[in-house]
Image 1 (cartoon, helix red, strand yellow):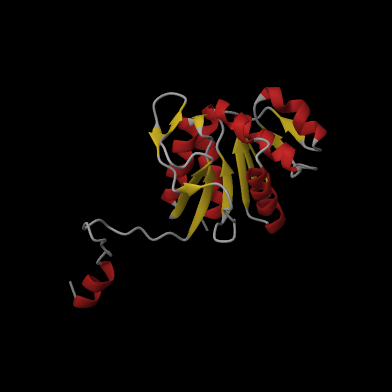
Image 2 (cartoon, rainbow, N blue to C red):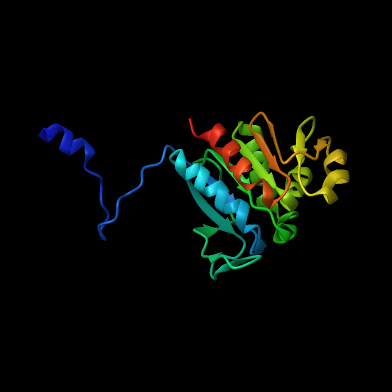
Length: 193
């Protein structure tokens, strides 16, 4: 092998000797402070990483571990307050029962509006679809989500579907955690250019 090929294939390592990952873009994940949907979140992150798109997580609770519905727990990368979508290729609102705690949060609603107005990826599943309805970004859009949200989606001008995943332009919605793999693939198809 030539020295030129050796140099180009050498990975950049951090101080601990781990390979530094290079991403084409980063997607913002807005995670409820508890009871988030772990399964779909795993598929979403994995699908994005597979197309070299990183994720950065935020929540209203950033000082302690946030806990999913079953067993997952992790520290988010930074607090939600004041985060801008400027450096991100889109935003995903993480579903699960805990999403109810975010539906009226001013920063959450602002991020949904920013994504919609700037033409960036905007995604949600299950209970977090209510965030999109309250943010006023569903007019004329076809969406799916928790069945209990049908009235809220229709009141916001959206067309409610019972499909597992709906894609309407750069808007991706998922019915529930069972939509995980399809939801993740839809995200990757939009931002994994």
